[in-house]
Length: 257
Length: 163
Image 1 (cartoon, rainbow over the protein chains, first blue to last red):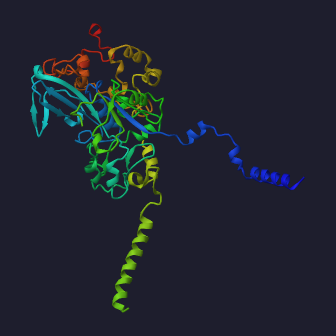
Image 2: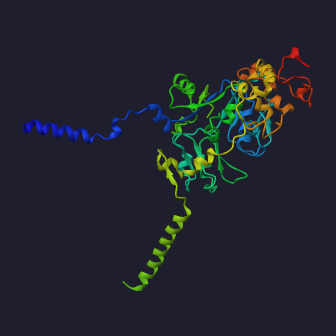
Image 3: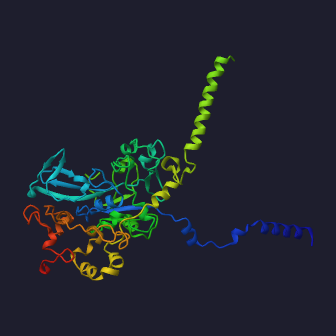
């Protein structure tokens, strides 16, 4: 063995010994994914399918213990009525907890507007809820770190840590937050986080008879919801605020904001 | 330096130390942030588990799932229902939350009120919305005050099969 061979073999032995044992084991991608699932919850509302029955609001309030008679709700349904002489009316009596059982428009403060059926141009219903923004303004303003966005994309409120100052309620451009009248903390839609983690659909999705509300994992390209968001014409509310909402709407009108 | 400088300085130092000690014991130790950083997710990490542990009330009784959830005991009704217009309505919308039924609640609190039916069957003159497909009545003209279920069968709402 000459010096050249000796050095060559030395280098090979050292290089071989320096490869860690873990690099030689084969990685199972399914196991890696199961240990660290890349989930990003997104909501899809098909406004064309909504009939304004309000079962979603009832189910949400029951599931999440929001007082039924209090005028606060995590999700609500808005009614838009355009008349033929180009007037636009929006209302949502009690957040549509009992649906829309009257044709007159609730203008607030006990005033109502009856619209001549012949004068109704287009009318439709739009369900609303927390948009679970990617860059949520509500979590930025919290002075105590009581509201936050989870890694799987849900914005939650820490009920033990919230001091009820109401900054987040003011910061939300969608008015999706409210002050819980019993617990005295800020409250909002959680995408039914407790149900999602048990493998159930959220209460409103489960309650909708018309399939107007759906939920899915937007990071999974094979998810039917992701397919629709990728391939069809969907919109988000108040895009100009830069909040990057994760609730997508099919059939949005300009006036719906 | 003179003592009139040092004395207030001691007070300030004592206050700062006191504040830090108080903070150490008062602020939960699992305060942190996930992959989204401090701006969007500075929080008590154990709170996520607290939310996950909340009990669910509604089962899964939507159009696709009511067969596997309710059929086991109420198969005949579910079959009649799912072949009808009302087959799209999840059972729990009218029958109430049934997560651990039949253990708890043992008996469901069924909403038979007129108002429940009127959610969909109030006639609204909106030809462009989904409502146009649903037959509607004028709540003030159509047997006001009466429960709809007195005449109509909610599981089989066809007028020919009225009781």
